[in-house]
Image (tube, rainbow, N blue to C red):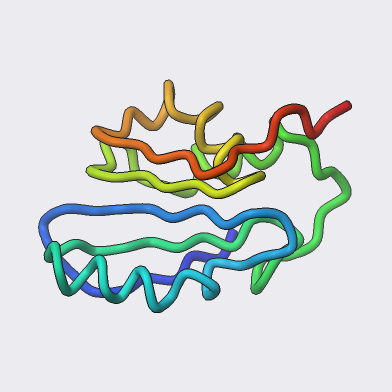
Amino acid sequence: MAVHEFGSGDRTAAIVHGISGSGLLWQDFAERLSRRHGMRVLAVDLRGHGSSPRSEHYRLRDFTDDLVETLPTDLDLAIGHSLGGRALADAAERLQPHRAIYLDPALDVDA
């Protein structure tokens, strides 16, 4: 899974885009978040989006597993929108972020 990194700092935030988006859609926000709070910000491209490769499967559990395999545990902040919000919420138990924000998370994308 492609990851775009913005800024630097001792703390790390992750941003997960919604369906038909990409991590670069969050670039302005990520750069501001990094400057204002001294954080390294990771913005992912979910499978089949942005710079990430296409896949045979696009199930919620696939997106969730990708996040767990790609993002560091113990994030200081995790933000997910729509599909990314739902996948991030499902991954939260394994990622253990200190804070999480879910913006309009999808309900049931496997139906």
